[in-house]
Length: 165
Image 1 (tube, rainbow, N blue to C red):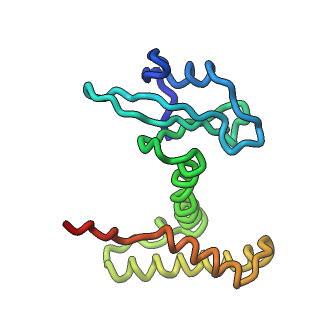
Image 2 (cartoon, helix red, strand yellow):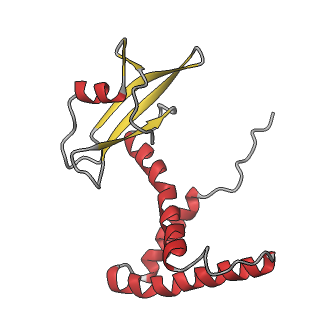
């Protein structure tokens, strides 16, 4: 995601900023996951880089928009949204642990083992609080949750195999 700025991008042969590109184009229906998708060229250090701009609605301000940029123009808009949203769940988890479960403020030691123990205790608290919340607000069965977990595990890779010469 990029902040709104006056930086100019090459779009349809003209140099325009992101607000001008947005205003010049017809938006998708409000039920769409994104408002607008356009191909642009970013000029950086004398080099031209093709990119895709995906404008999405700002959930906190319905009349406003946010801009996601991908330099992999082969990705569809849905893939760009998915890749951007993937780490968000982790951010929400850590924010909850820090804000409500005292991940940072409760322990002030310097022992590595003690810090690991503290983090494990805080994460255990989170899991204990999450179970009733899931049972009360989510209709998925344990089996469905396992399938969801398996789908998530396919996205997680610790290393990519190298191509052999």
